[in-house]
Image (tube, rainbow, N blue to C red; front, side):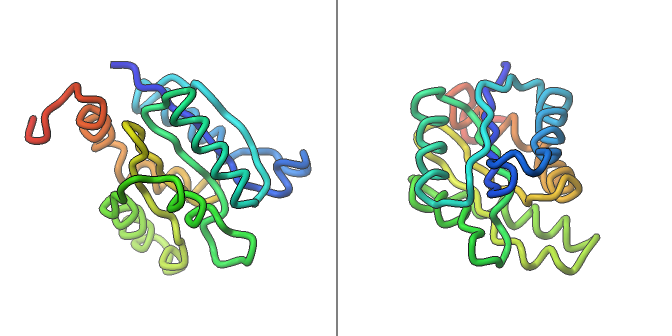
Length: 164
């Protein structure tokens, strides 16, 4: 199955055109090469909770993305509000993915413990908060990429919960 994927970058500088969005490029490459996914929506919004929420809702409800990958806004800075915006739009949390991302990254850098990214379900869509750096995006995505087809299969109804 070809999964529909949306990419959302939360970045004040990126939304003003002051920074190239290299993290989204890494996401796009990994989604297409590793997952065989199709990018159905991509956008950059400022670090504003309401704008992040609106984008997540549109990506899941209108574009019906199977997977929404966010990048940026998961740190400790006052404007890092992506996890809070995500919490306000999801129906259920999937903490194991966020735990796997942090565990994998902790093997490379102790700063990974400062990431506040979360993962959750909205309808039949999986939303995952990734870090803002290209390296962090790559390491985090690869920490659970092998489990994405199964997770998305369950959410879409294509697979049963206990399918091998």
